[in-house]
Length: 361
Image (cartoon, rainbow, N blue to C red; front, side, top):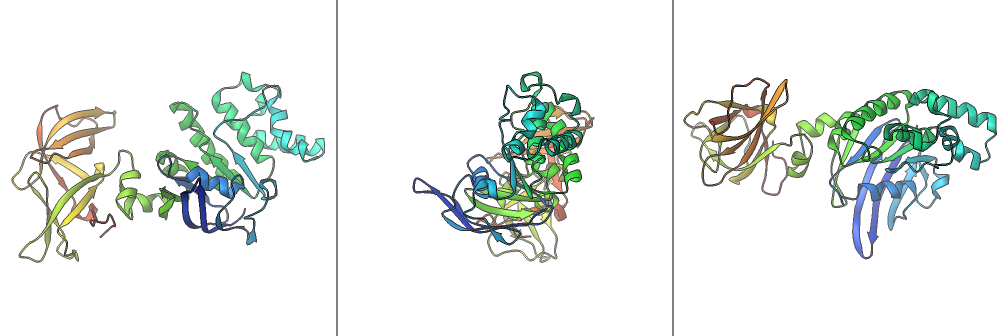
């Protein structure tokens, strides 16, 4: 295990800044996931950590040792790429042990380490096969095994599951979670899939335009996103975000007035800002659909996704400024296309964001 520290890391390509002063600590044994949309800088940041790109500014330390200018092979890290990069003429065993062979490790030790890694990955029966005889998931296991045999201080994964189909991605997520508990090693993992991030990570780093938007445990980011970007990115389906007006009442409480009509009350104990234009966020599972009632926002059902145990209901609010909303309900909820419904929510589960996008409550 190792502790990784990034201090004021910056990178520019062709006079275009892509990493803007990143500060981050990955603790011993932590599974840290970089997540964000395409072009946010997550893979570039991983390559800077690996030494495949040079930092323009800042310092990278591993266990308090400065490795900013160290060669990739001297950093004590092993990287698993998006492409499997297996030698087609070599067997699985030869592919996994090739790096050790180049490092002039004796053959007996190579065989022992390969056998141990193959057991961890449950691919002992594949050692004599060549890559063309393997499925995508099996090839990815071999690529991971090639990294494991090096016994690195840290593993770096660059979107390792993106080439797999949906079923294999689910299977490999399970395998990575199992391997993670067995290896007990520090991991930095890059993905654009926030489901992978939520299910695998001890710590998630949300990136946007080369900057960190929020760092925290998966449920922390889900339950208390720091700003509108994180609120809209973490969660599947994503959080519903609606521009509303804040209005105070005579009882010193407040309410949220929807653009198409209807209000949601807020707790009287809240300390609400002076500004009147806010964005309210509500997770699909925190909304309820009821019969139309005076005072509540009304909406029209536009799509019903029945998934068995649960159903996602897509609605559009009624009024001049329509809002698209997704509500999670029970699988057998009696709803129909075109039905007019009302929306309500528990005020304690709502998220409020100021005009600058920052969280208020």
